[in-house]
Length: 443
Image 1 (cartoon, rainbow, N blue to C red):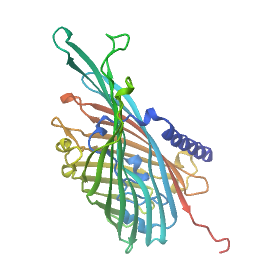
Image 2 (image 1 turned 180 degrees about the horizontal axis):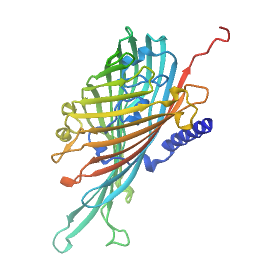
Image 3 (image 1 turned 60 degrees about the vertical axis):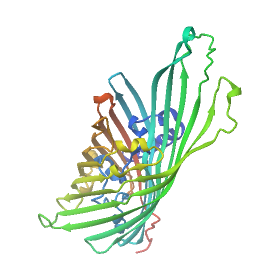
Image 4 (image 1 turned 90 degrees about the horizontal axis):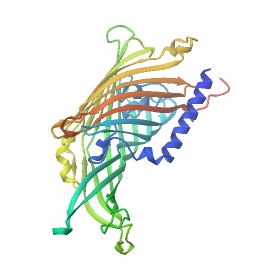
C-alpha cells in the first residue's frame, strides 16, 4: 500500500510541475501585497520544515537536504537532492468587494553532496528570494472637452505583475567536531519583474467604438544583478535535561545585497490606430541600485531522546527592511519596516520504532507562526498568522521520501482601505537520498 501511495504522489508532483509551466492564468495572480518593491519575501527554508511553517535552521533531518543553514552541510553522509512545487489560493477582501485567485509556483531545488563524509559537505541550489504575482484593477475618470463639448471619459487601468528575485547559490559546511559546525554560502542574485499596464476606455456611450482616444498598453521590465553571502553556525548539546536527550541550536546571518538594476519600457502602442505606433518600442527609463536588507534566522530544537522520534522546535527571523532602498521607485521606500517572524512546531516520526501499523509509516509535522510583515501601509502593519501541517512518506526500500504540507493563514486587514487575505496553500517536495552512492556487493 505504501508503494502505491508513493507512486501516486510522484505522479501528482509531475502534474503540478507541468501546470506551473502551462497555466498562465494561475501564475499571473497571487497576493496583492507582492506589487510593492521587488515582490513579497520568500524565506530560505528546508523542505523538511514546510509542515512546521519554519525554516529548519536548528535541526538536521537525516536523508533530507537542508537549505536553511549552511553549517548543517558538514554533517552530510550521502548525496541528496530535493525539489518541489506548490499552490496558494488567496481569498482577498476589502471594504468594496472580494476576489479569489491562485498562485502556482515551482519551489527551490538543491543538490547536497559529501566531500568528506560527516565532516565536509557542499550544496548547490536555486531558490526564490521574492515573488511578484498580482493583478490590480483601478477605475478613474477624466473631464475632456469644454463648453458644449464637455464630457467625462471613464477608464480602467489593469496592472499585472509577474516575476521576482531568484538566486543561484554554492556553499560548503564544515563539522569541526561532534558539537560545532560552521558554513558559508555565496550566491548570484538576479531580479526579473514585468509590470504590464492595460488601459481600457469605457465605450458604453459609443456603441460604434469610435472613441477618438486610443487605448494604450505597455510593459515595464525591471532587472537587476548582485551577489549575496550568508554564514551559518550549528551547535549540538547532548544530555541537557537527562542522559539521552539533545538540544540543537542554529543560526544563519544573511548579509545585505546590492542589485545593480535598471527599468525599461516596451511595447507601447495604440491598438485602435496603427498610425500612432511608436517606431522605437523599447525605452530605457531608469538605472539605479536596490539595497536588499540584512537578515538573521535562529532557533533551537529539543529532542527528548536520541532516536529522532519526537522533537520540538522554536525559530525566529529578523530582517531589517527599514534599510531597503530602491532608486528605481523611491516613493515606495517609506512603506518598508523591520520584519519579525516567530514560530514553533513539533515533529513526530513513528516509523523509527519499526511498527508495521499503517499510521506509523509516515512523518508528521505541525506548527504555527506569526509574521509582523515588511510593509507598513496607511499606518497598518501587513502581518500574517499561519498554521501548518505536514505528512511525509518514505519510499519503499529507500530513504527517499515525499513531503506534503498544508497551510492556512490570514494576512493584512480591511482597515484604512487595505486588503485582507485568507490564504490556503499546498506544497509537494520530493527528497532523494543516497544518490551517487553504491553499496559494495562484497563485505
